[in-house]
Length: 339
Image (tube, rainbow, N blue to C red; front, side, top):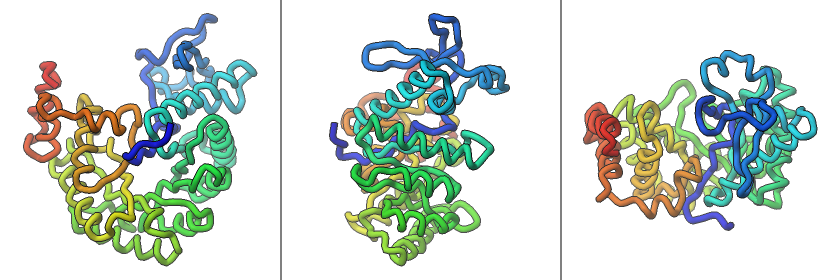
């Protein structure tokens, strides 16, 4: 399937990602082992969870980092478990591809405390994903060594890879991206702190764009990220993001793209998927042509289906426009089954 019009950087293949042990994605395999439950085609499959995870405090608290499990088993499990680890990641990649993703975002920063292990994990998962999916990779890391390892493992025949991300704070990533002929997500964070309001976001992006110009990275390879902050922290946060998109689109024209982490807006609130979809729709109206999202939740199809005659969508829009003080209308509607 070719990517849709909305630029999707699929956010799911991260070592930070969590499943709840009491949920439908964790169960017992036929041999009685605790496993991750997943679909491969029409078949239900099981990925056994190694003892080290089952003995962890995280497991005892009801959570499991499922992508870490898949990489651990894929790289070092016995034959059947290793194959299941690869199959698990393959299923994740193909689901995102089927829902219109343009890139598969990969992050192994939390895979291990050892940098050599993380580098091997980055190389392994890059090779594994490119065997099963046609999509280019987005390499996400705060460590230039991991970034370089990931980029070096990317197959250029799939198109340019994407660096997630560069910023004034992470300017050292710019030459790494330029040497790899990669595209970049350009974030609005400053050297010392996160921006406040609209003007600081735009000013930081302007300075960053000058650095990208100096490195020879063309505007068409830049995906701007004006930074999404939770509406639960400040009801003005969505408006800051939307207004920054409007200003940056007017300044840089149609050549640049956008890829903010849109799901950050709903942090701490119920029914996050509805909030995320409406926020993506609102941003799209001002020229934000993409985002780092879960492709199963946000894609061309789901955005086209948004109907503000539906109470849940209308309430989410009010929340994101700053018209629902403290989000109480939204929270009440979710509690009462009205959203």
